[in-house]
Image (cartoon, rainbow, N blue to C red; front, side, top):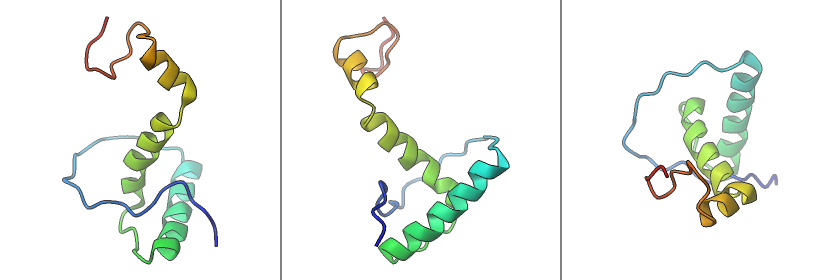
Length: 83
């Protein structure tokens, strides 16, 4: 069984975002959604819904970003303020 970084996608209030993706990335999202569906037993209806949890996971595990946020780096908006 493959260990993916994402778990089941929560059913959350949708927000409309317009974004252009390279075709190869879109195909990867579709493939990831298929594997995630098999792993969790819950099909992902729209692979684009993976983008937000992937970004959240990426940001949450980025050590450089976490360090910059902790040290109050200029322009980091983790506390919703721009210094």
